[in-house]
Image (cartoon, rainbow, N blue to C red; front, top):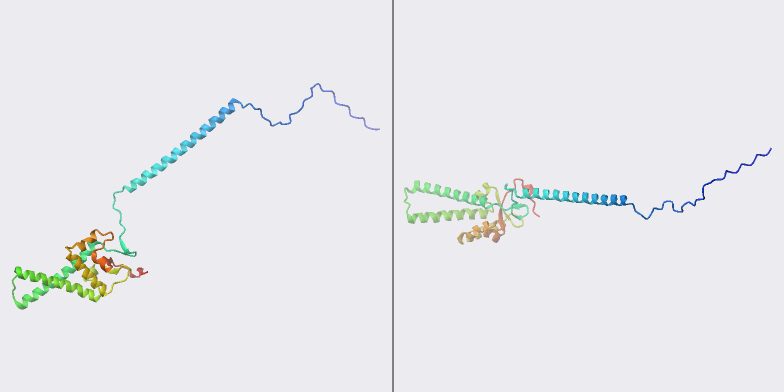
Length: 232
């Protein structure tokens, strides 16, 4: 027996309706509430951005202030020694004066020994104005002979050795006896110019006197580890 055909749906009373072709289309009218919320969000974002910029500027100012306080520290800072040769600092004027005084005391001791021997062999001697001038000249001659003897040997004086001073040329090599002799002669020239050649070391940028510049040599504190010094 064949199946019965389905019954037709009952008639609907709803009027026909055409669906919209653009279901996601939004109205052209923007609600006032959403617009006000967007403005408030932008103002809040701008305010937060200004606050972050102000905080960054404040942190930078604080860092600069701390750096300025460190720069204004009144504690003495170690000064970098002036150098002619990059591995050998120029000896300070105070050390050089001490070495010269030690050499002068050594010569004075020799003169005193000579005076005692003369007193024992020749008897008493008088110290007058004329003899004082003679003794002064004799002491100067002894001092000159002492330095000339060290120059000819190519060695530093006793005072320089006691304070660990060493002569070097501007290229870092030890000077020979000729350079030492020329240096001693230039020192005498600076001393003869009312001591201006020696006092020049107090005003020189590198702490060098006339005889240092003329002989192209300078004293330096000897390295306790000589192996660390290398000539280039």
